[in-house]
Image 1 (cartoon, rainbow, N blue to C red):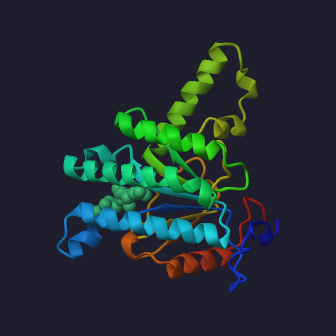
Image 2: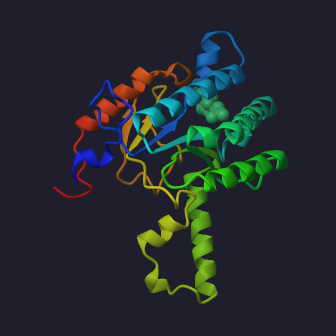
Length: 250
Ligand code: FPP
């Protein structure tokens, strides 16, 4: 499989840079960014949300088909209520904006995760955004926010759903394939990420896309997420393009 399989850079006219089909980001370092400036942590998240807008737009413009970010983990509920509430408000604001603009921008916004503990108004917004995304057709780029997402939680839920199908006689255990598991994850409708970026100097996966990242390339940088620029994205893509992906072959 040649590298040009990922080249969708029609609009990136000043660059011959092939782009990955699916880029995912762990948006880390917002708290430290705020602390360095003597600001409260939510201020870092607010700037991080702006960075998300900039980078998601850039990804779409250079032809990345899927852009997925880790916005709130199943463990983030442990943070102070003020911080959790501030994040929920950022989601409300973005979802309002998405509902108004996604059709015109040709970007399908999706929210991935266990949505059941989210406030009812946000769940309603997500349902509305989902409906618009469904209407956009296959050519739309997809921007996904992982909210109340945990990789282990996602796999546990997939196992439960599969067991349920087996118990109802809809599926034979010997017919459970890797694809069966993929099809029961929140990401069922998208390819696995080619490139996963973690800014802020932390070098771990933190329960993000555990199943889907089996063959992803990782890129780590010390830049804090609020400072992450389109130039940083270009660097990550250049590094990705220098790697040889063998998918277990030679
Ligand atoms: C991790 O950094 C980041 C989060 C837990 C939240 C990320 C969320 C956003 C950037 C806002 C998303 C909103 C939209 C609309 C996309 P951290 O706070 O743990 O950073 P630290 O390690 O420096 O403390």
